[in-house]
Amino acid sequence: METSLGQAPMWLVSFAAFASAAAFAWWLLDWLGNRRSQIEKRLEELGHPLGRRGVKSQAAKKNDTMAQLLQKASPALAKPLQPKSEQEVSKLRQRLSYAGFRSEPAVGLFLSLKFLGLVFGLAVGGGAMALSGLNQTAIMRLVAIAGGSGAGKSALARGVAAALGPDRAALLAHDCYYRDRGDLLPSERSRLNYDVPDALDQALFRAHVASLRRGEAVVPPRYCFVTHRRDGAGEPVEPREVVLVEGVLLLHDPQVRASFDLRIFVDAPEPLRLQRRIARDTAERGRTEEAVRAQCRSLVFPAHARYVEPTRAWAELVLLNAGRLEPVVEIACAVIRARLGERGSPAAGALAA
Image (cartoon, rainbow, N blue to C red; front, side):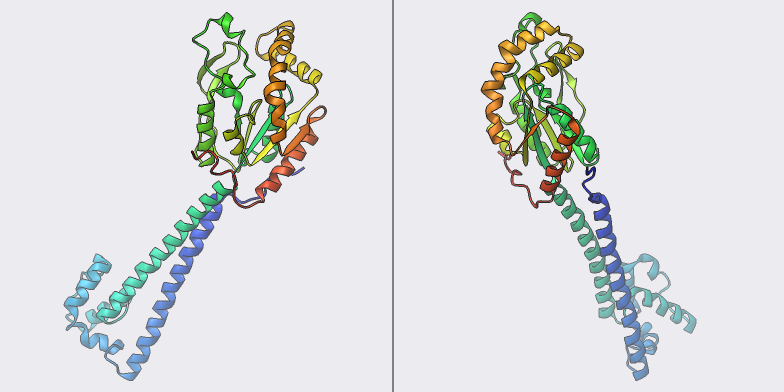
């Protein structure tokens, strides 16, 4: 089973692009400098005023203009600009050699090329970083894992996330967005139906899904299933190449449904789902087996038939989770890898409104 998406980290790609652009700009400047020396040597052989001898003869005459140019290039280069001897003239020529060509227009041209070369390196490198960031957003996939209560959605999501690795996958649970029922008495809260769409804060959930799509982290609420109250903020969910979102009613809302790049529906026989529900609620939510059975008969299973089962038709992949989990995880990972290989994201603008 594949356990990695096999892609280099985006920061490494960005750094490599930036280093390559900077190296090219530096090579170009070095080549220009060497070419300048060759030209000047040939001009000197021809006795041209812009040759090496010409610099010595013109240094005093053009001293003031050169001083201004050197001052712009680097204050340190412009300190001793009053040559009083042949040795000082030689030193001045060496400083001029560092700055660029031997004439005022040529010095300005070379300094401009040097500046433009550095700007080119920074622009290309920065553009590569921005492009890699856009590419990371473009290849991000939002994967819905829906299905009835007790079908094994959470187990499948955790299994896929573990197989892909924490650097590749993130998890978001729709269950975190149940409404806070602090306005009701505890006895009244326990009689509510939590398997219907109105039980969830869908506006907040839509906003968080849209933020993830934009590459922004979200902080879902922390919900207590014992008190039916929110208990502060949950763990932040960072955008990753794959964001796995699991929940019973994920595919019921058309707007949310359209935001997913892949929709998976997890199925399991009703008796098995009941057994799993009893095991979970008695161990984690302080309920008795009789209470769980009564709740499933009166609320959970009727709501499943009305709201959950019809959303199976919107799923692109239906997985039966009635045995070992590993083969189901393997199939889901293979499909997700195939989707990551596709360019673009057809659902990127689904929640823009």
